[in-house]
Image (tube, rainbow, N blue to C red; front, side, top):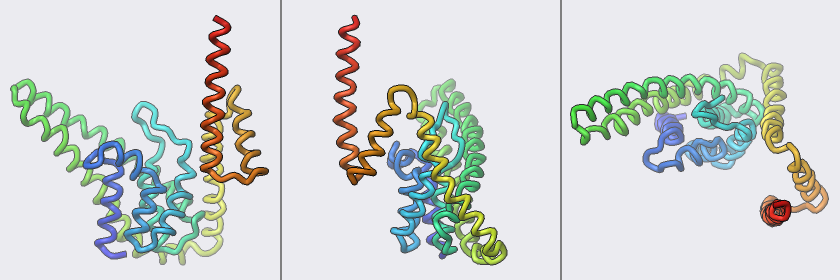
Length: 251
């Protein structure tokens, strides 16, 4: 991996965490491993493999939610570094996933550290308001937080991609076939874990029947995801109307 490619990968990670310049599109699109993986693959000249690796990593985080601003894992860092190391090191999708998940956990340290340090800019902005210098608030509301985010996100990710890509082959040789096979088995189980976490939230009460209905439509009717989505939309509308009529009759 060249230095320019590593810098671009670091920039992708920065854009996934920043509201600038794309607003919420950064978090809701670039932050997701499937899209970040595609961008990293594009930078490394293999967008198809990047998308495959990113999608595989994304399965692990399909049920992840950010409650109260807290994140259990940094899926964007897992997507960027997992895809970059997977492509440059020639790893299988399962092995890349097994490597990416611990990296995502390390990313939470950057996240919480940044959130803590951002309080500094808030207090400085309050002092400017007290002095009546409201024209300088943008410095502490936008400029300084973004500069700090760039330093804490883009630079470490760039270094990890550049130096990690150089030494990944040596690490693979050191680990040997047995450990890599073990990582592959563990990585193969992680998508199932991600799906299980999602089912934990939707497999409740009256919604259970819809899960089995969707499974039967795929298994026996051979419908694709678009058809399933359209059927689900129609069923949702009908179900909502029935429930509303039922509640109206009860009243």
